[in-house]
Length: 234
Image (tube, rainbow, N blue to C red; front, side):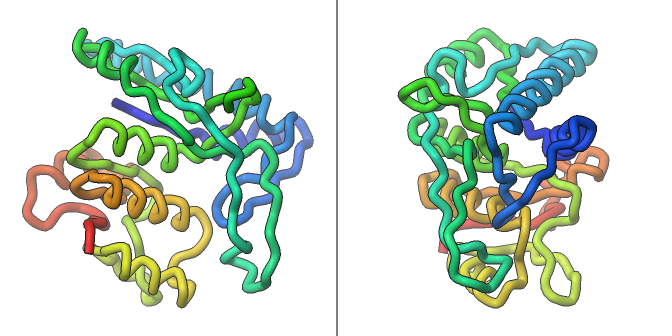
């Protein structure tokens, strides 16, 4: 199963349209116009990934959280912005998080040998569309599936300490300390929150990997040292 994002592409399209973006705690504040652009761009990326899998001889189907009731969203309620050091709550607009995951469509596709490729868009119970952080979406689905591993591919080596060195192993307690002393900020915050939620929900471990490295998932799976930052239960 693949859950993909599209932050840079969404940002580029918003810039082209003259729409400014603000990020809070690693999440993009999303008004209705931004939500519409995100759904359009993510849909295009989704079909591109499906095409790449087909070109390699695989079978894939593109989905979003809206399809077959895969994900029911709810509006994100964020704590004060962890990057600004001040006490304020921010309305992120149409940014959602999974409230419920129905795994049945994934089970059906997987049983037929088809890879689900999922865009992080979903609607709430009233039908309102929400943009969901891709890592958050992936973590919720991994937990619903009882997955052994959750792999989060990003554009850095993993979680870095204040000297810029890779931290190879973390637990929820250690992550809380890193957030408290501001070692981790920005987009790494929702990634680590996703890892903690996933492992506490039953996923054996979550790994943050550098997606720019060729075959990085194979390196992680088949070597003793691994390739990124492993998050496991305390």
